[in-house]
Image (cartoon, rainbow, N blue to C red; front, side, top):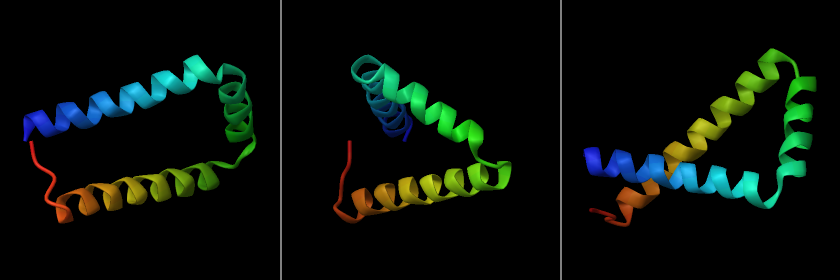
Length: 67
């Protein structure tokens, strides 16, 4: 279980890091756009992203992904 958590965190760090390396100006634009949204909108977006992540994890387990 710990290995799976470390794998997930590592993959997130890779994707996040690549975004900053490959498109730093785009990241700045996205941050500006997020600042312009209201707090409830940001919370809703965060909830939708979390649900999407949960669906990805569920799908991985349905495909019998294991370490």
